[in-house]
Length: 355
Image (tube, rainbow, N blue to C red):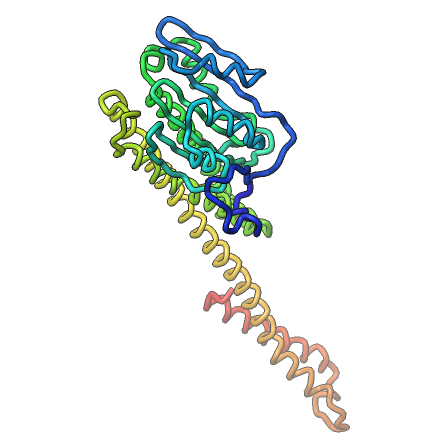
């Protein structure tokens, strides 16, 4: 997904109910995975045919349907028809440039947030839109592409951890959002380590590429801030919403925990942004100081040579009668005067600590 808002001219004036994927088009097939569980059973499957979804309607177990890929609008429409979802929900899920938000509908609770991942090999930060549709016994998660940060949640379900298998979809939604926010903090910790290393280098020996590296990190931090800020608002709204799909007695403490974590992420990213601004100021100050030192040296060098040039200029005139020209040791006397004047001026400048 692009890091900036991508809106084509053809989308202007388009109906909000239009089911059209607004992200990067791909030819990969949509992947649908299901985890169906309760205290006594666990079923995990990859759905090969759409009709298999019908087996998870109106069950007494908790069902998590994860949809990887939004490029098939017909499939998304069919999912909405099977579970009787408002068309606006499906349109929001396919609008990957939408801001993080939470919205209650008659048939479900809808929430969206940006899921940010770090490629451990290339150290590239990738982002995609995540939409959660929360019903009483069913949670549908829509992602732009394959690959997510939810494997720890799947492992907890597979290992039959008591809390998650005994709770409903509201706790499952909390668990998924908790992993998303934990990943924010992890990525910030990686960026923080880079900032600290760069700060040490800046103090020891600022190199020419230092400014570019500071700018790159500042861009990444600003990118994180733009996405964590709306996520914080969404979590706050989620914790305050009065909905039949959220059991306050079961999850209220967990939503407060999410608020604490997202606040930590916001404070961390703001702190890093201030650090990078200070580092940029230090870099410019250091470069200016070095330039001043060079200019000071050149100035002192020029001042020392002014009287020497004056003396050389006098004896370089074309007058026939200059008394010192007839002295046998006149040449050496001139050099003695030059060295004496230069040495005296250098000594004076050192006493004044000009260099």
